[in-house]
Amino acid sequence: MLRFSNCEYLKTIWLQPRKTISELLESDKRVYILFVLLAGIGLRLDQSSNNNLADQTSMGYVLISALLFGPIIGLIAWFFYSGLTHLVVRWFGGSGTWRETRLVFAWSTIPMIAKLLLWIPLLLFFGSDLFTAVTPTIDSGIGPFSLFMLFGLLELILSIWFFVILSQGLSEVHGFSAWKGFWSVIFLPLALVVLIVLAVILIS
Picture 1 (tube, helix red, strand yellow):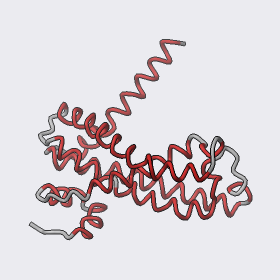
Picture 2: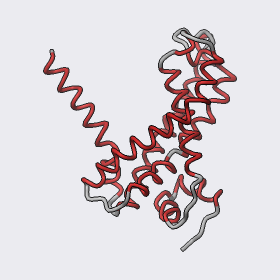
Picture 3: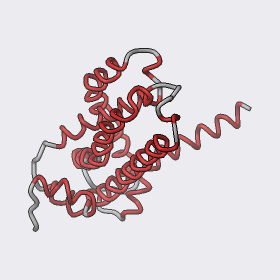
């Protein structure tokens, strides 16, 4: 079987996720723990942005909290979501182990780490606007606004690619089709949306 170097794994996971995951299953490369930690920093920055955290505290705290708490958030999210997803894929007839599911989740975060790299130019261009309700820099003209929207589009593409790699990886380790891998990924959030809608209907 084709053997990839560490750098080749990082490239092939984008377009050959099944082959790459298959190769990784035969190795013991625990470097994927680093991916989870880095992805957690991105998650923390996203949380801070969505909650307009800089309206309540300083930019320094926003960035330091991302570096300090982000890796912890990444680890917790990794164990929690990989565990729930593993239960779903086993229910769908998957044959892989939780270790394999965790490995797939970890390597699927490569696009999320790419999203983390986007924060560097975002912070340079827009600064605290990214974490406040009022955004004077972004709203200062068509140029800054268009640039901000371009970054948003890139982030959306990377988020979609995360789900593509995850679906393909799960299908590889659990021995079913890519479509079943896709449904196993979206089953939990879809079920949550349905429950929320039903709750709203019953309450109203």
